[in-house]
Amino acid sequence: MAANETVPAIEGWFTEGDNPALIGTQCTQCKTFFFPREETYCRNPGCQSTEFESVELSREGTIWSYAEHFYKPPAPYIAPEPFEPYTIAAVELAEEKLVILGQMAKGVAHSDLKAGMKVELVVEPIYDLDDKTHTVWKWKPLAA
Amino acid sequence: MSKDVAVLGVGMHPWGKWGKNFVEYGVKACNDALKDAGIDWKDVDFVSGAETVRNGYPGYVAGATFAQALGWSGASVATSYAACASGATGINAARARILSGMSDVALVIGADTTPKGFLAPNAGERWDDPDWLRFRLMGCTNPTYFALYARRRMDIYGATEEDFAQVKVKNSRHGFTNPNARYKKKFTMEEVLGSNMVADPLRLFEICATSDGAACVVLTSMEYAKKHSTRPVRVSGVSTVTPTFPSTVIEMPNFSTDSAYSVPVPDTEFRDSIAAYAYEEAGVGPEDMSLAEVYDLSSALELDWYENIGLCKPGEAEKLLRDGDTTLGGRVPVNPSGGLACFGEAVPAQAIAQVCELVWQLRGQAGERQVEGAKAGITANQGLFGHGSSVLCTI
Ligand SMILES: [Zn+2]
Image 1 (cartoon, rainbow over the protein chains, first blue to last red):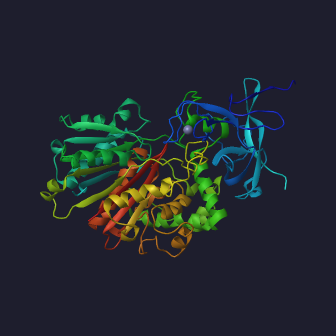
Image 2: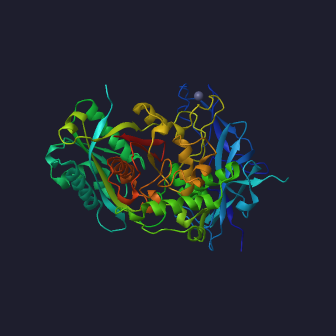
């Protein structure tokens, strides 16, 4: 059986390749970072900028917290059959000073994690749909 | 000028899964509240409805739906939606009209009929809606956020699974005799810790269910209240604040927090600012509270609220719980009603139900769950997309 074509589950949110990164925006005036991309009006109440630049966010961060899921969530999540537990982490990016959610890489359990642990961004499959494998960003513990 | 308004009447329809139309629950709660207030429906000059988004058009225009069901009377109407905070927003709208002199008697009503299981996003593909995308791209449910907060307490403050279970045990004992509660069962530690893990570290019996139910309060000016009651309960503070940029704690349904890159983090983070606003309006502090009703969407979240409403410093909530301070008979009982642990959540009714409990407690009408000598109480709650909700009542 031929391997599925692989496509991002959502366009323009992350880069692929050996060193994938989330794509955010940065306000050209006050320099505040945004993820997901903000391109309309700066959310800093002291800034009226409407100009933003696309930026790749830091690929590494530290875990703020994490949660492992033992039940199939409702649609629109497309869960594999049979269902496999998955972990979601909130990760702090030191440079951009914000916290971003993402699933942990496949097979990472809550018992592998601790707040403050270093992680890096990877891109992995999240679901199959219309004969295509859809990918998304995930966090993976950095080799100690 | 006093910012107080009176709560002249309260009423509820018991929480449960009754399978009926939400209007039926709401009418029952309204009639009970009007009877409690000793006021005729035709004397109400403002109807403030809290919207339900799961019951079609009548739910979107809840205020008018209830006004029609009770019999068109020409009263002014408004409907608020602020997710779980809708009830507080409805109370605030009514209070504003009364304090401005535009209304004397306002009825605030919220009711819901809920589907089974996890609250899921509305149907259809919506690639620009973060509430839809978080499910699609990450499988990120509401319990995900509660579990993140819970695990953070464990890793940073040394909270244990037993602490989280103890909150459920406590609340189940509080709500055991509450006639409006859905779950009337005294849970043991073993039962809670033996329930299935849903979003680790939270178990099935530690995550709140969704329920049908309705709650109503009749608010009036203090002057009007004097004609009907010698000592009415007062609403002395209402908070419906939004966060202050940058808000750096991850909140449902977002993918990320604000960035603090260019603007420093405010002195008071969002959840702390909710009760702080109500305290400031009322001119009292956490030390003046006899009780609190907080939103225990998860057992662990109740511990966060202890700190957010100022009952203790960050990291001290587990000690407060373990010492029995927040149990009935303790220094400041939290969720004497039984909380969401005993009710399950009926979104547009819940913030109003919290106020009903404060009123019964302050009047000394709470029966076996009565907090002795209650003089002041506060509710705390938060709605999706940045809605603070807190109501402070005194007598
Ligand atoms: Zn800006």
